[in-house]
Image 1 (cartoon, rainbow, N blue to C red):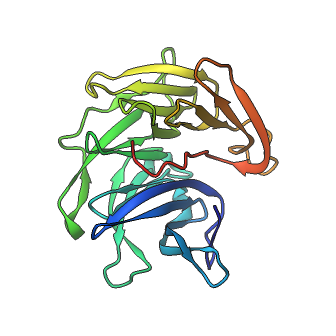
Image 2: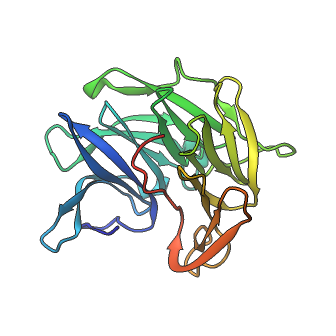
Length: 276
């Protein structure tokens, strides 16, 4: 998938997701783009420029000092959330909530900031109607209150924060949280120590199981067939210590396999446009 964009800030892609968006009964396949260079974009897949490239439909530039790392859309409210990790001061990490600018169809505007140190990634859970967010030591859930311009994230009425610190460790940083498309009662996460499955059949009594113990796993996904795939910063990228040219796979009942590519990758994502 390729897209074209004008202006600066579209550098160091940190997150990309397909999402189905319904407006007035019409569903369109869209893409969410998050860049460490500061640009955040929403694209309608198939909407082309004169050069036949996918075009950015709506965007905003966020402060690069806080390093945009993850993105998600909250359906029914038109909200976009962006993980601002805190940069040089992780204590200042926060969730930036965006909404469409009513006076400019090509822009987002900021509507709320929610503090979460080292926040890195999100996924919306339509079954439980919460946004899952991962950051320092915890996986947190948020609900949405209000409508339109008054819509906001709140921890009130959500589930208790889930401790993601592995046994024997005193702290960790969560790097990714994704749905398990083969089991809607699972969340897939990564932290400083590895990749894990979290059973949220009862979100108030979750169970975390290690899938792959290794440092620097930046993303972890699983498709509906049960195939798992992940990116681990492993020194194969000459341009970054948080990217890799290698993607890992595991099919159910098999061992790990990998493919070396010509691309520097931070995260791998499934083309599934659904939330779970």
